[in-house]
Amino acid sequence: MPVTLSYSGIILETVYPIVVLQRCPMQKTIPIKNVGMSNLVDNFQREYYYLRLSITDICNFRCNYCLPNGYQPEKNKPSFLTLSEIENLIAAFATLGAEKVRITGGEPTLRKDFLSIVESINQVENIKQIALTTNGYRMLKDVDDWKKAGITSINVSVDSLDPRMFYSITGVNKFDEIMRGIDRAFDIGYQKIKVNSVLMKSINDHEFNQFLLWIKNKPIQMRFIELMQTGEMDNFFNKYHLSGKVLEEKLLRSGWKLLPKSYLDGPAKVFKHPDYQGEIGLIMPYEKNFCASCNRLRVSSNGKLHLCLFGEEGIDLRDLLQSHEQSTLLQARIFSALQGKREHHFLHNGDSGIRQHLASIGG
Ligand SMILES: Nc1nc2c(ncn2[C@@H]2O[C@H](COP(=O)(O)OP(=O)(O)OP(=O)(O)O)[C@@H](O)[C@H]2O)c(=O)[nH]1
Ligand SMILES: C[S@@+](CC[C@H](N)C(=O)[O-])C[C@H]1O[C@@H](n2cnc3c(N)ncnc32)[C@H](O)[C@@H]1O
Ligand code: SF4
Ligand code: SF4
Image 1 (spheres, helix red, strand yellow):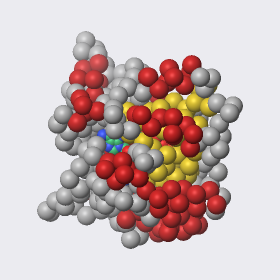
Image 2 (cartoon, helix red, strand yellow):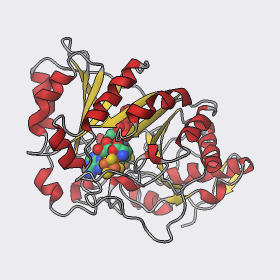
Image 3 (cartoon, helix red, strand yellow):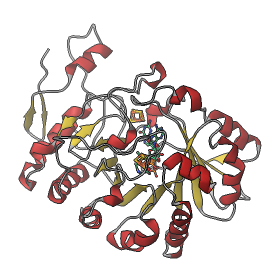
């Protein structure tokens, strides 16, 4: 059944009625609740203030859980969003209420115009945080420039504190340099660094106590991420997935306390202990209700809006990123698409949608 919606006086033709109909098969009037609101709110009353923007899917690492064979160039692939397309995109999201942009990839810092991208996002009114997720390859050399350009917070992936294991997971022998990059970030004034580690049974789970020791006197938020199943994994997931619940119980037993969350925070459950300067974050996407607090949307490096980390093909925005004058239409398309966002992922059924690996969208 076609449904006509309007946003800021513009008639929207498509509102993804199938999703809505599946939720209420008996209803003739479709209850789209958020029509006419200027902020990004979905049909489950979740609000979106946080955009994860992937600026490239190229990566120079070969993480065993992500790109075990390294980055494979594709023929006839669309080019990455240009600086001006990114400016138009961020301006539209900011008008819709986004306050935080996370730049991710692939490895985002490999883009030659990385600093210009950050600088231009920094000019957009209403954007309060520009965060970066990086493998840390360029951190030691470039973190000063990142800060000057406007990066407000950095998440860096370090899957092991043992340099040999680090090499075996990532395929890159840069452990010491990445550690020095983190130190440099503190030296130049970052108050906190978040470190991501994908939890893998018998690969790095035995390092938990070393990680604790590491953050005792450092303001690091050490995050353990449950391995998520993606299309390119064969037996990897079954062999190595470990629930973060075990760590949560351990933390609670030894006096760590769950901290409250801000509306701009990502999905980690964050714990604090009076004897530690650092914090522990657990990202547990297989936990019940993980998606209830979803506050983020994603745009891929070729300009597709992804409502969920897992799932659909993406909604092309690129034709509306060509000039500032298209902003209202662009906002309308984003708003309309959001009304089709699903309540949660279907990872429990082994369904990661089209997601072959997380480098394609930035995690
Ligand atoms: N399933 C799922 N995983 C997510 C989501 N957001 C982030 N992650 C995973 O969390 C891990 C860390 O992500 P980061 O890029 O560091 O960002 P974040 O945890 O959202 O960080 P903050 O914005 O600093 O709170 C990655 O492995 C992501 O794939 C999400 O919405 N759903
Ligand atoms: C896709 S990477 C992109 C940014 C950057 N290259 C990096 O590694 O930080 C973003 C995050 O996704 C995580 N990730 C990748 N594949 C994953 C998977 N299958 N399960 C859980 N986390 C994953 C990585 O550990 C990293 O922290
Ligand atoms: S997790 Fe990040 S660094 Fe590792 S292969 Fe994927 S995109 Fe590259
Ligand atoms: S899996 Fe999808 S719905 Fe759930 S938190 Fe992540 S992006 Fe949001």
